[in-house]
Image 1 (spheres, rainbow, N blue to C red):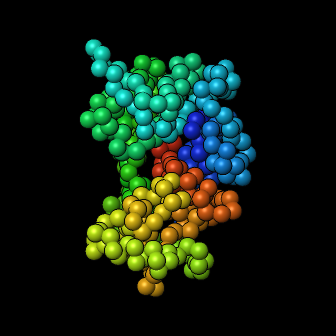
Image 2: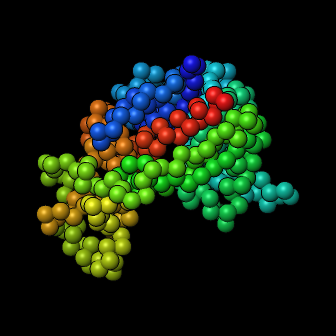
Length: 322
């Protein structure tokens, strides 16, 4: 039985890496330790590296990926990463090619660079569903082409975290590539077993809530005066009998007039606590967070749901063992 070595880019607080490794419990269900070992992790953000390093034996290197030579990345079997996606452009040449509007757009090419140089057996990349339609749908095929140019047989699928027992309607696109054609043909995306009886928010709520998480009367009055107050089209009060709407890094700046999910309970509006957000993302209870709100919200909102990544990794390693 071989152990697959994992290199993790854009690691964040470690949601992808926790799912890749397994060996955790969430809402009473055990996610077994997988045949993997994280040998490298890196992120540019100091705060998310701090959370990562509270929770993993392998430490996250705080660095700009553009400054990391391929030779500095240990040999690995699977490369993972959720690359930034805000700044792609399509250069109108013939044929069209992928460009970038600012420095963040370059980071995707760094992942391709390491794939070309290190030639791992497989990779998995995660991103927002909106990537499929970016630039009138022209960006995504070019991204797939870049991965193929790096030497991989590539497939993708949008996956909804709530179908895997996660209390969140989080839709993300996963791109998977294999160097070996037969391994690629042997791979199938996990489908998720739940389409009904989804895990509701009420299963993860804390009993005692600090006053600092409640919105002031002034904030509520401001929301009521908003033209969207009747529909709560902006401040999204959640139905606790259903999974939560997608949580994002914006939770650090949540307001009743934002698009982020909030709660209405005991005739008052409140934001989710950091621990509740961790649960919404399927992090286990023993996952350590920092003191305070903002840093945790930002890190957790950007994370990959560990439970979804566990299912993904299980199928990838199975495909490699044909």
